[in-house]
Length: 628
Image 1 (spheres, rainbow, N blue to C red):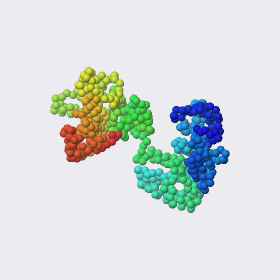
Image 2: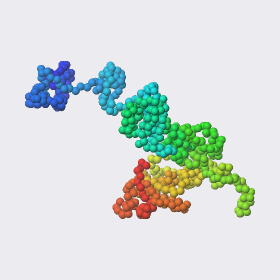
Image 3: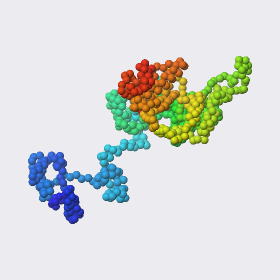
Image 4: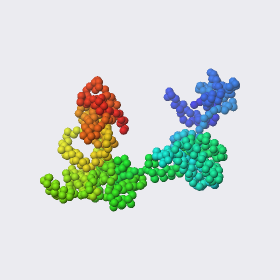
C-alpha cells in the first residue's frame, strides 16, 4: 500500500473495498494498480551501491556517480521520482509456469486440457502452450533416451564395421582352461567369430591378431570397430594398432549397451547356447525340476515340490510336458519338464492307484513341507528292495518248526501300516490309517485350512466356558505322531548324511499370556538344513524383562539339544560344540557372566545350568537378527 499516485505505473481508481489494519481500524481502498518496486539485493548484486539518508536514497555505480534518486515518502518508503528515466530490476514469471508449479509440475498438455474444461477455479484459459523445459521436472522426471531401432544394414561391404564384446569370467573353465569369451560380429554379413581367453589381459593381443588375420584373409581393411569403454578395449596397444591401420575405433556410451546391441545380443545367444548344452555353474539352468502336487487355494498358482531346494513352493511359471506325462504312466518313471519350471508327473502312476483321494488331499492341501528327496520313490512311501516276493516253501517249513505260527498269505496290513509287495520292492504306507483318523475325529467333511488360526491371536482363560476334553487333544497328537512313522515329509526328515550338525533357534515373547502375564518359549532344531523338532511351551513363572524371557527360552533349547546329542551318540554320531541362536544379546551376555548380581539373582538356579554348558564348550550362544 502506498499513498502517492505518481509512483504507480498504471492505476485504476475507484472504491474497490476496505483494508483492515493490525489495530482493527479500516480504510477505504481508493484504487489498485501496478508499480515497479526495485530489489535492493539485486541492485547490489549488479555492482551498484545504495546509500540511504534521512530524506532520500541514492543508487551509485562503482565510480561514485549517481544513477538514480529516491525520495522518502510519508509512509516511510523511498520512491523513485517518475520524471527521472531509470530501469528497475524486477522478477516476472509466466502464468503457465506459475500454474505448472502450483499443480505439482503437471504436464503442460494436461494443464492445457484442464484450463479448457474450467476444472479449477481462477485457472486462466491457455490457448496453446509452447513446449518448454522445466528444470525441476528434468531433475525429478527425466528418463533414459529411447534408442531407435535400426531396421536396415548401415554398411556396404564386409569388415566395414566390426562389433566386439568380451564376456566372462565363467565359473566352469573350458577344456583348454579358458574363462573368457571374445565375440566379434561383422555388421554387414553378421558372421561371428568366437575366441576363448584365459584372462582378459589377453584381449588386446588377441584382437590385434584376429584383425590382422581377417584383413589378410578378406583382402580388405577394417574401417571401424565398435566396443564399450572396458580397459581391454580402451588401451594403448589397441589404439596404436588402429592408428597404424587407419581404423577408426568407436565407443558406445557408458551404461548404454544398446548402441552396440548387435554383439550384445550375440553374446546372449552364445551364453544361452552353452547353458542349454552344458547346464553348469556359470550357465545355471533357468528352471528347476519338481513334482506337481496340485493347485494353490489362495492364489492362481501351482503347488510344486522342488527337487533342487527340497521344498514345496507355489509358482505360476509352471509347464507340464504332457508327452512325457503319458510316457511316465506307461513306463512308471519320473517325468521331466523342459521349460519355465521343470515339473515331474503329477505323482507317479502307481502312487495314485494305491492310495485314497483323502490322503492325496492331505498331501496337496495341508502339508507344505519337504518330501522324500528321491524322485523315483513315491512321495510318502519307504521302499525296500527284494529279490523274490514271499518266502519259499522250504523257508515256510523251517519257520513253522522254530515258531508257533500259521501261514495266512502275503502280508498286506500290520499295525496300521499297509504293505504292498511288488517286483520293484516293498511299499509301506498308512493311507487307510490316515482316512480312518480323519473320520474318527469328525474332520472328513470339514474344510481344509493351511493355518487353522491366525498367529497373532491371544488365547485367554474362559472361566464361564465349557470344559475341554483334554484326552481328545492328546489322542489327536498321539495319532499324528504314529502317522509320521511312514511319512518322512511330515516329520521334516529329508536326506541321510553322516557328520550331522545340530543347531537350535530359540525365541520367546514377553508377558504374552493375557491372564497370568507369563511368556511362551519357542524353539526349532535343525539337523543340517532339515527341521526335525520344535517346542512351544509356556514358561513356569513371570519374567521381569525380555532378556530374562529369552534366557529361559535358550535354556530350554539347550536341554532339547542335549537330548538330541545323546540320541545321536547311540547311533555312533558324535557332536562337537552345538550352537543355539538367540536374537537377544543381553541373554547371551548373561550366559557368559558367572557373577550373580541384582538383575539376575532372582532367576531360578535351574535355568543357570546353561552357563556350565557354555563354560565347558558344549554349547555356544550366537546372536542372530530377529528378521532372520
